[in-house]
Image 1 (cartoon, rainbow, N blue to C red):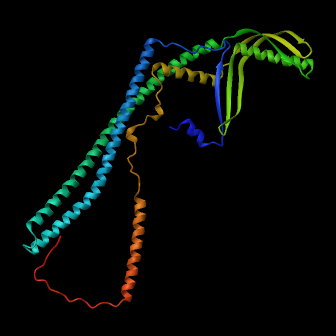
Image 2: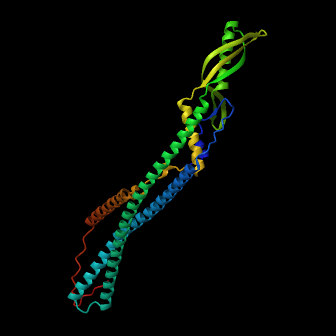
Image 3: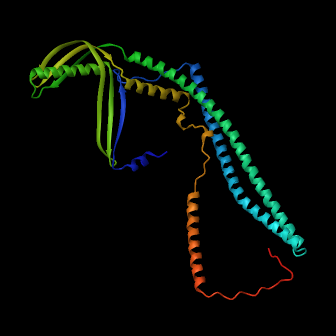
Amino acid sequence: MSSMLEKLSAAPRHTLRALAVTVLFATNAHAASFAIAPELLGDLRDQRVLLAGKVKELDEVSKQIVVAQADKRSAAGSIRRLESENDQAKTKLEKLQEFDRDNPGTISQEQLRAAEDQNRKAFSALRDARDKKSNSESKINALNVDASAKYAEFLRLQKSFERDVDRVVDTQLQERLLVLQVKKEVTATERVACGDDSVPVCKERSKKAAELKASEMGSVVFVNSLTEVKNFKLSKEELRSEVQATLSNKVFSNQHMVGETEYETTITASVEPVIGDTLREQMAAAIRSQVYDMVGGRIDFSQVQDPSQASDEPVEEAPVKAAKTKKKKVVQEQAVEEQSEVQEEAPRPAPAPVRRIEKPTFTF
């Protein structure tokens, strides 16, 4: 996983923005701590421990599958090499035996026994390599069956665990919403500067400001902290607030000018917080995070995969080798053609006299 510095270095010319959302309540800060029934908390912790154990089991099986697949590929490579060596040893032995039958006494028995021993060793090595490949395939199949069963059990436990966590989150969310969504009687006074505005316009602005203050006093306030960075330098930092509430039974009083430049308004109203979907999701996410912390920490389920589905395809290098072989063959063909042309231009030597050997010899 790349570090934050690496992520920033990947795009130094782009604008980076960090948005932090803080939720404040009418009582300054809402205590978000809560308690879970001991029986339920113990059950969630037990499920968390079981899930962690299943993850470790899947990881161990995955490692065993990787090793078995490597053994299988190694055995397959050895088989290709040993088949060639076995063919060579077999051919050599057959030639020696045939020559010995046609020319008795020419080849020593030590040579024949050495060739036979070499042929047996080559065949034995080839057989062992084939057995190793077969055993690796059997082991992979058994491990895949075991991995599939363990992964299915993990999914069952995961679903049960997340379902129980969801129940706790839903219960706590509803309790918090009941606390928040309470209509309150609020009295607020706000004063605004008129500037060049007329008195009626300034009065209306004062009323709006008083309504906003009343909403802030009796409802939920979003405080968004926006930080903008360009080329690793801070270019902008803002704080923005958003109030979500419904005001009813509004009564404006004490509306008057303060001096010659300001206008003041007092409002008394019933304020009912409005909890939108975004806030609900944020509250649920915060509660879920607390639940995970209480039971032993979050498990990144997205990283848990079925080891039996892992690919065993080796890296394909055949096309490169084929290209090299083809190029080498073309060069050889060109060399043969040039050599043939030279031989055709040069005078042919006289044929050598045929010599007759009374006692044939054979060298290996």
